[in-house]
Image 1 (spheres, helix red, strand yellow):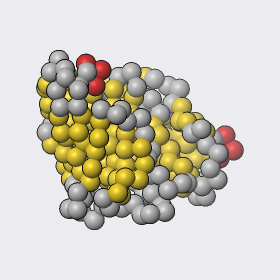
Image 2 (image 1 turned 90 degrees about the vertical axis):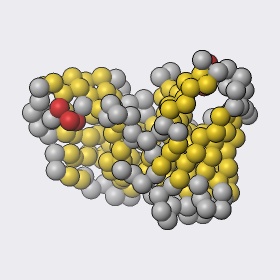
Image 3 (image 1 turned 45 degrees about the horizontal axis):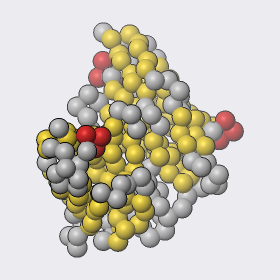
Image 4 (image 1 turned 90 degrees about the horizontal axis):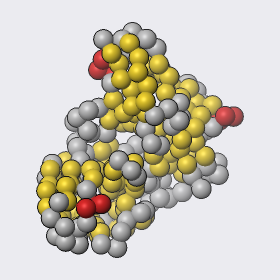
Length: 115
Length: 116
């Protein structure tokens, strides 16, 4: 079975703090894909990043960085110098290597950044 | 703006009724996915279509059905509605292919359904 666990239900930080959102996944597929999505208060789901299982290189995009570790089945997301606009629910998702394209989502982590 | 459009944005209806949610994928995307987001179940996959054909089914109730038309837009039909069907319904699209599906999915703004 495939599963995504985001153990942190809610996180609250003060602006400019760094914050890491944890994501642990389970899959028996040797090829799989991991994603992060952001859901701001307005409700839409915004794609942030995709990572393939065969590419363990970490990625940085501005204040965002992602740490993919196959050894611990984790794909963590760090926001550096958080801002109020980062307040949202963040979802980690998994897609297996089969022909079915559906994503399996974690329960999400609600991040509140206070000024 | 993801390029995926969904109508209507809000829908309020009574129990027992039937509604149709509409989705237009991004230009060039062949795969369409439907997801339901509720407080207790989180984000749940319902069904996927690829180029007009059903590709995968998730936790979709028998009262729900979907189709993808030749112009690639998709409709999700919900019938005999119950209070528990109240949720945010998302459509997503991706380039897709017969074998892959690793491409990221872009989500529409969602349709918020309230059943009273």
